[in-house]
Length: 130
Image 1: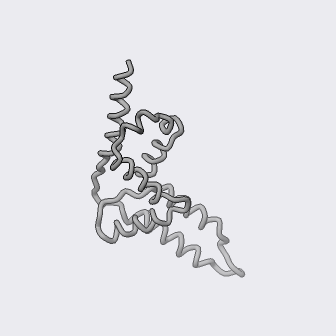
Image 2: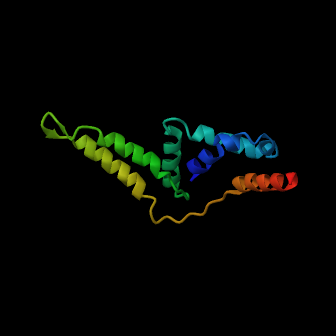
Image 3: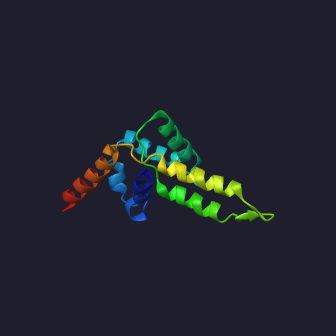
């Protein structure tokens, strides 16, 4: 969910709304910038954070797209090595599937106060310009 929100807010049309971005509190801007650190090119920090959330029993809804990317990568590995079954590939596939399935059944609630502030700021700016 975080990745979807971040992607939407990073959209060039949204990013060009300079007046709106200036209306956002510095604290909220810092929080928004922290997501850049969490979601890097290879998602290492994101994966570590997701694993920590699970281990700590915290609420979490991981982005399935990262796991699907991993599955596609592992699926591209050969099924056999020197005529023998590639058990490493099978183990990696299992590990990825386990990471996806372990969050099923865990309840969670989402707090999106900072996104709500951005949307309310957009609405208030659009109504004041009319």
